[in-house]
Amino acid sequence: MPPLPAREPASAARRRLGSRVPARWRIAAWILFTTAMTLLAVMLTVRSLLIGEARTMAHQAITQELEEFRAFAKEGVDPTTAKPFTSIEKMLERYLSRQSAAQGEVILGTVGPKVLYTPSGALSSPDTGHQLPGDTRLLNSIRTQQDASGIARTSGGEMHWARLPVVSGSETGYLIVGDYMAPREEQVEGPILTIFFVSLGGLAVTAGIAWLVAGQILRPVREVRKVAADISENDLTTRVPVRGNDDVAALAVTFNTMLDRLEDAYRTQRAFVDDASHELRTPITVIRGHLELMEDNAADRRRTLELVDDELARMARIVSDLLLLAKVDRPGFAQMRAVDATSLLLDIEAKAQALGDRGWPILEIAEGEITADPQRLTQAVLQLATNACQYSPEGSTVSLGSHFSGTGNERTFTVWVSDQGAGVGAEEAAVIFGRFRRGDAARDPGRARSGAGLGLAIVRSIAEAHHGTAWVRSSKGQGATFGMTFPAPEAGAAGRNQSDDTQDKEQQ
Image (tube, rainbow, N blue to C red):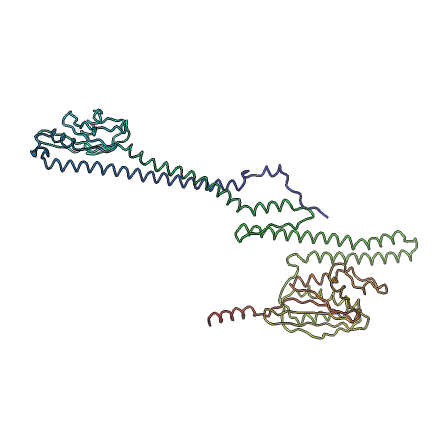
């Protein structure tokens, strides 16, 4: 009995191309990486939106301050004296004294080289560490630029600014409003930092869930691997548990189906080898014994050679039967096609006439078509007829017959052979279709040697190839009837059933 193919050595497995990282780790890592990239994109997007909103708020604050000064300058009256301002410097001083700068905001006025501000510190931005009044270069740049607003880079960070000129005669002054972005950005970083730590926690949870889910998804794969590792030369019965209806479950089903085919093939191979060794041992022993005892005379040699030839013929038939049984489970064993049941039985009856001196009446005959392999059916029925000849008296009757039972999709076809021999007992009938099983009549010392006991096993295999069964009905001493029954749906029955279903639905 040849062994199963050897397992691949571990060294060869390591030399195979591909990742050495387990699939579970890879799945979890990819899920974690994708989630991390998504969270990073969300954080960057939120930060960008918040920074944009902070810039908008800075512009609005500057615009509001300029509009307030524009309205104040248009009125042109000192609120404390109710008299018009006598100079631009007085106007700027009065306006600045009434203002209170917000965090990161700076408001100042300039008249010529003079910088006006209030003692409250509204002119500077202590939050950023940059003093705009002391930055002469930046002030000159703001006053002389063509644009009335802009963005300046300072030691305290980015500052948005705008200026509003005030002209009175030959005197010109400016109100300058600046807004440092650093404090606003710090306010943005707080929520972003919160999102970051929440994202870290989410990644940790995602990693755990991904690990568990990947393990659950790959569980059938691990079971497939375990089953494959547990399969030995003599045990192919282990199967992968199937859970659910997803693709991984389909993989387990496919793997189990493959194991079923492998087990069937291995069982067939083992049965063939066991059967061959069991049955061929006897003729080989007989041949060897007679050759060893053969005397040196022509008559004895002739008798020995005749016996050897007979045993070799029996061995050839045994091997042929075993090969046939080994092919039963292979695709294409039965070549199905439409067959006329009447013509089939008539052809079988004509061929059976040559089997022996028996009467061969046909007691019933089915009329109609069946889907079957006519050659295999003929082989099976002739095997039953051959057995009937062997186990019935010469000149007796061996009857043939066939009939349909049921209708539509439930219709079955039965073909049978009945003899007038010694019959089969109940215990014997239960096992008679097994391999190397011969009836009591076959072991009768008064009868010639019968076959190897494979004929009825072949009949059963042919019946099963037609999705049917082989059967026997007999009582000891009252003859026996052997037959086969298999499905034979009427042509068009499926179409009629579908039409009936459609009509029922329309009526509903």
